[in-house]
Amino acid sequence: MEEDPAAASPTGPLAGLRILDLSRVLAGPYVGRLFADLGADVIKLEPPRGDEIREIAPKHDRGMSGFYTWLNAGKRNVCIDASKPEGRDLVLDVARHCDAVIENFRAGVAERLGIGWEAIHAANPRAVMVSVTGFGSDSSWRDRRAFAPIVHAATGVLEDQAHRYGEPVTQLAQAYADSVAGLHAAVALLAALRVAERTGVGERVEVAMFDAVLASYTETHFALLEPRGGDDTGPIYDAGPLGPMAVAGREPHVWMRLRQRWPELGDPAPADADVATKARRRRAAIEAWMAAAASCEALVERIEAAGLACAAVISLREAATGPLARERGILVEVDDRRGGVRPVVRSPYRFADSTCAVRGPAPRRGEHNAEVLGELLGLGAEQLRALAASGVLDAAPPDAR
Image (cartoon, rainbow, N blue to C red; front, side):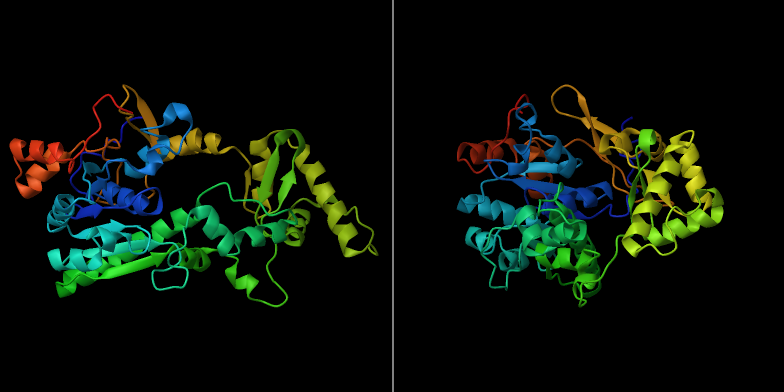
């Protein structure tokens, strides 16, 4: 695992774009991280109290958490108190030099701060804004707090998972609503930038997490059928000492293909047995056949020889650090800002000529105040010191977590 050699390349497909990232926690910052990997100059604006994502971590990792690093690698950071009039004006001044703004404030917060869409548009009519909301700024739920676990419940995803597997309702082990909303917001932002390029006028585009989940969850269509449709097309078999094995396809299809290619399986179910008995005995036969394989690799070859897709069930850590991940260059190392390095998963886009890369470490709070404000606004050292003295600018000391 090495630093990404493409990080310093100026040939990212979004090179030349400048994005002001006002967002915090996950969905919005994920949009900014994708744009940074694709070559855009992403300026993260962080309030003096810091992005909450810095603290969502085990105690030893707080401040520059792995979560924060993943979502903000490659960005520059300015720390401005937008609740102060001078801070609001400074944010709008920076926005005048940006092509787009990302925000995920609760409804009305950006407007109260004076940095909502109307203020941004007045300051820079060409800039576009992507807003990630929980339930839509024009809905009756506009004021409700929205985090991924809440959206999972409100969209029916948790109930659907429980119904499908006949288990009690439990929360998802990942922030699905955030990541899928972030991906949709990135697509929306690219589309809005295309319109602004063509017309010379920016517009605001909104992506609600509620909408994004229902649009992306593959089982939504089946849930609309009466009776509820959908079948388990990815059974997990117990291959004994070889561990669990996932095979794509409904179980009757898996049985048929394996029997055709490997007749020695036989059929342990009497011809007059009921469907449940046949299914249970055939599954047992498949699992015994799997467990008898010489190795996991040999078993995968035998299943694939039957025209079926399969994979051994492994841990997330094994997947991220295993042979295929190393071959694919999935992980790259970035400075952890604590005297070491930490791994970050690279974005999955592979271009023939352009580059997509993790372009640097995650920034400390306010690390680039002087660089960004000097470069964009021409502010000198005395002006920066005055802004810091008044509390408009803030920054974490270099040795802070």
